[in-house]
Image 1 (cartoon, each protein chain N blue to C red):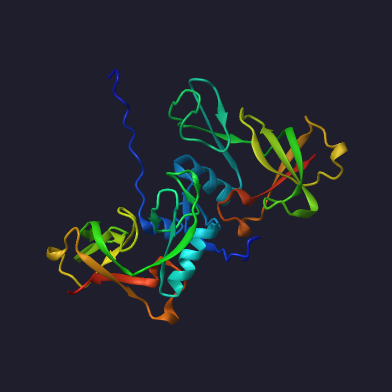
Image 2: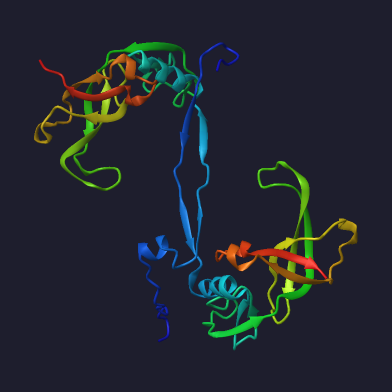
Length: 154
Length: 170
């Protein structure tokens, strides 16, 4: 590389080696195991403030209480918010826009973020619509949040 | 107990739990590549190291000869003026006997990192490098040392083009 004064300058190339391994934790482990093996959603309920967390959490983030009461959550709920993504995380244009849904599952007080599968025309999607969770077949489930395909407008 | 933090027992995991997939994990490896623009002074300095030479910059304001070179004198607050080649000898300004490696493994023979004031540069001007070929008991502040260069074919324009510094005899 030569700059305006025709003096040789260089760039020093390097790489920072980093690798992370994140465990799901006590409650996360139960949530993903149940999702993988039985295809069901598990939440936890806080006796102190009645918050119901999905995915299950081990501590209440409001009152710091330990959460031991498990709740089975129905795989359907209400669309609380949505967004259409036209670029990916590297800012590259997507061939097909991807829709994301923020869903309040029935029985839960928290919101759940995942894909919106049959969104179609953005102008026709309505907040408050009913949605249903779509799961991958058991053989393809690995204990990941992607064991869920996403939500489908009913 | 008032004022005492509550102690919460953690859940210990073994490597086998992670590798055997007994617990669910998410692994992530970010791509952290970088290109650091070295600028004129450091670019030339490293280029000259590749040629087996030490180069400095002189400021005509304060007459200091500075190594590593810089294009701006932080004392006179003005651009520096001239390139100056220096000999690859110097004196130990300070040193340390280091019995662990950078990743904290024990070393039987210590590494001797040292700040070396380069001959011909202004007092206090020097570079951090490593001294070898000397017993740890015999290293002294003020001792004369000389650069030992890597063979030309192995140089890359880096501070490690100097393999190490050794005592200068006589």
